Figure 1: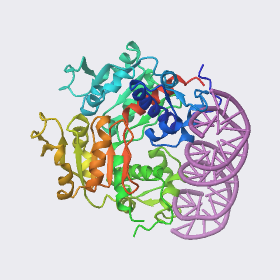
Figure 2: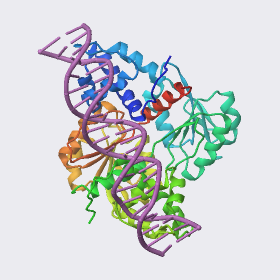
Figure 3: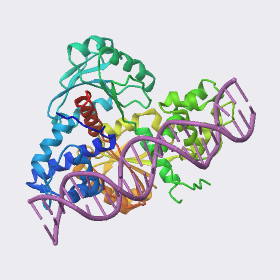
Figure 4: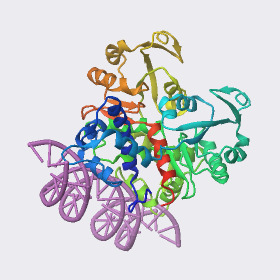
Length: 212
Length: 212
DNA sequence: GTGTGTGAACGACTTCACAGCC
DNA sequence: GGCTGTGAAGTCGTTCACACAC
């Protein structure tokens, strides 16, 4: 299963994620089919792109009709690995972490927070949602006992690489990094960066060079 | 000034932003020059990429030596439009917005929060950092009087397009969208998306298809 | 010798365009 | 008639490799 001849591009996966979101909406609205054109308009891409993206994984559509909404929704969940539940820890008991944990879609999509960590004595031991903030020193052992799949880093940039090294050593294979710094990992570890500052600077650049 | 023959790629701008971050560090450490190789290693890219990125804007380096750290730092700030201060409003007085406003780099880079908005009666009127949460209904007029450059959207996906339309009508030309939905804007408006759910799903995909 | 600047080669993603099927 | 699936063509970004400057 999920044997791909080609490596799937990052951009494709991102779009699949977006298609899924809109398909869920359509499904709830009772739509039974959706054309590549409709999906494209919703997700801000082109019909050809939608068809190409989906074609990497099979032929889900019916010519002359479009794609079966409910079926494709299920299929996309499988493809994205959302048919199962992922065990997530959040490192850094600050605003970002709690914004994430609070986010409805987070649980809805099968991500479960199984631990929250911080290095500040003031925060350790405090209640945090359903969980209790634990000492970051416990990470190495907890990663194994909690069977952690994904670690979310919401800590200062200077600490990021150090913590990542510990996580990787402990066996974590997926990291979502909110710290505004590049982290280095072995090839078998997947890392995604969310860098608000960078996006903001992208806007700054756009505003500055708008007149060209 | 800033007359570019070519359109600068988004990926290039993102890397410039990263180079700047590391150059600032190097500058503070007292480093006077940095090679493309050094910058590449810090930012997780290649030396050729660094040189190419910078070459779009001029010849800053000295052959055999590298790039002058302080000078390049200043130059990159100018290029990215960070030499000036940008006036930012945050829409949605929740965790995400406050995480952003709290972030040190935010102010440091010249982004100033000039207003915070929400539609919840419970939140309107409350203090929020230095500001007071205002009614989202005041947006249209405030955008002009406050001379807003950038609007940050930290509201539910369903409300995003509606608010964006209002913002665009009021003259905002740069939007940072944290809502997990695509928003449609005229071409003269710059939009960046930060979608945590999408990144997380990218990791889910990677974990699911790791064995390939 | 060391490291930049850059055209040329390469590779990857996107768009086109049309055959095929409903 | 409408819409998918997909090779082919096109476009855009990255990597190479080397002349050139310090």
